[in-house]
Image 1 (cartoon, rainbow, N blue to C red):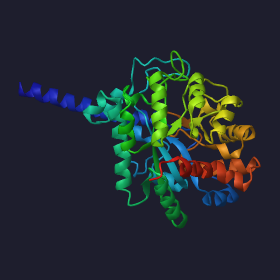
Image 2: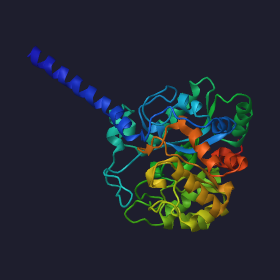
Image 3: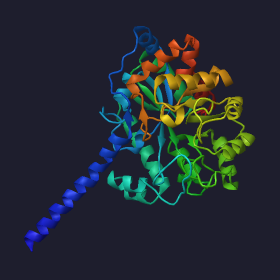
Image 4: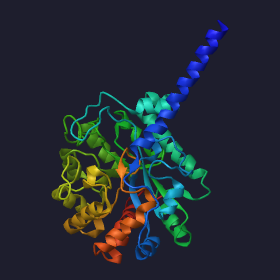
Length: 387
């Protein structure tokens, strides 16, 4: 019996080892680049890049079983690589639910990939059944990384903190500001008071939907693809009252219309493409580009195939040029979707190649400063809570 028991124990340990290594394998296979680094850029582009305040509106690194402070050879970013890429500000999003067989056309909310991922990554048991707890746990991961970073990663929650960071960054670029966002508001679990829970945990950007319709409204990839629900209208009002920015990435067209009809503050789209260069269910029409810009908001252009059709620098620059021509340079930014189960042209250390692409496309130095981060800096200084 002892031998049998020992054999069972060994088998359990082996199975556990397999289960716990699966997330690392999945991470490595899903967050890839078309070309591995190091990434070359011209001397002119490299010098220009080092003078920029670079900001990115969407990174899903918190979903994966990585320490933000450590350098990895998988995925698209971590703090050492953010610093190598001269990133000054990164918005980190929390992913709490994705449907099985996820696609761009039509998904229900009946299944969930993240449950098994949370278990395999040994997240706290509370996260196995609660979407709110998953968001709060990922927020805690970001807080802890900032706390342990010796000032290199700074969580920004208000205008004063943003202004303080900018002052410090001007004299020492070896630091990155972090802003916390949620990808979809299903973590509210249908309760308006959970907006307060997210705010208190440091969330300052709220994506309304992800790959399925939720209690707030329709997704561009959902079954119904409807507009704001009555609950969603109450949520939008509360988000604006608390000074949280509304993110329309992944929103259905009716949802975008409904939000723009009632918004009183700038609205952003953290990571997207434009239909004018890459047609797709979630890529913005010219009309939506113009109406989002009219709120004073910004649109973050992504790097992956669903956003720009071909994950390559010329395609990203083409989408940026199109958006700038439609709504003006003040409303266009970067929204990579790093670590979002995406294939990218580079990891974050390759950002000088994007600066080079913008230079080669004839953008002025002022335009490049605005696109690469100045517009995000301005939006946050205007729209975050004062203190």
